[in-house]
Length: 185
Image 1 (cartoon, helix red, strand yellow):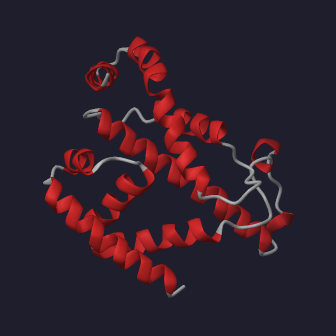
Image 2 (cartoon, rainbow, N blue to C red):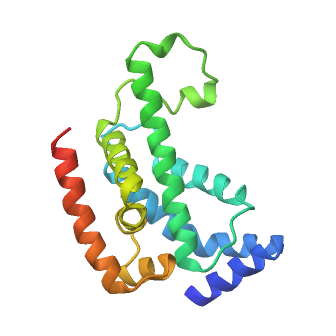
Image 3 (cartoon, rainbow, N blue to C red):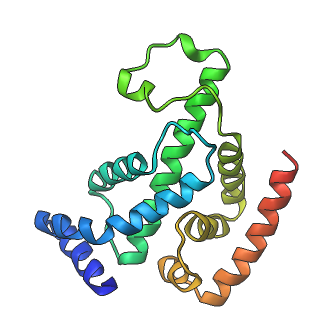
């Protein structure tokens, strides 16, 4: 199935719109698993549900015509990054509301996705990853792919075009750095 997904991604790159229609049923389960992993870290009662996260990521994926898909691992890496961005955007919007920004007008569909309690952990993790990326982009990307994307060491190595040993070493160092950084916040 991995090879079939890669072939459909390449066909989609080449402008075959029907490739996308054949691709989505094959990746839907994995996208749902990624979204579930993200949502498991959110508080109970989070306004965004797993299926809504998958749907929003899907809309952004089909809008990303500038991405030249390399393979299955690359697709899921980009998907994971999009899901992380969506959740961080929602968390930041909730945080803004809590700080008194609730007098702004928000369209009804966006208002349904906003709660008054911030997801501080996700925002703190995103800020820590941004800090890490400023001085070591590869380690930040490895955390994103492994932790959020659920990619294996080998898949991460393939996406980043480095050895599995490099990914394993950087993964350990990045986890230790992030734990220390998050404890200091």
